[in-house]
Image 1 (cartoon, rainbow, N blue to C red):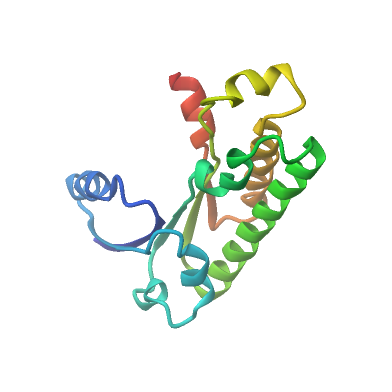
Image 2: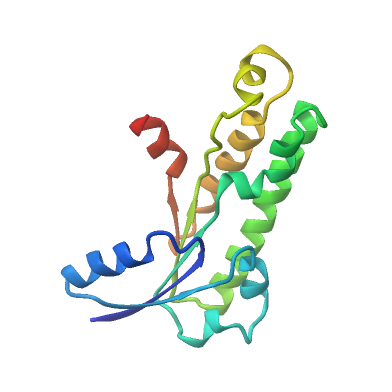
Length: 167
């Protein structure tokens, strides 16, 4: 059994996934988009993403990349603005997932919730002030969770839950 698995995002574990799939009798092939290029790859119908008619697309996004603006200056926005920012990010992702679903109707699309490491000033800010970004991360994750509702081609991988569980 052969399967194409374009993975748009980080390629940190592609070799591990390939090895695990081979052990289970699959013959995977991967295409990994350039760093930060996932939206362009999805939007461009001539992108290599679409060239293989993949069975599965893993659209793995990193929380620290998504929320880099908020992490850079946690004092720059209030809670409502942070949540609106997160809603915007989730709407962009939902639009991309919709486009993938339309262009690749037989493809399973895997998206993920995100977590942001509480480093530096955020450790104290998160629970002891009006600053922090967990409210935005939570808003984003809730929206991502809703993407799978009523759409059998979308699977949500709860990375945030896995990180919380593993400590």
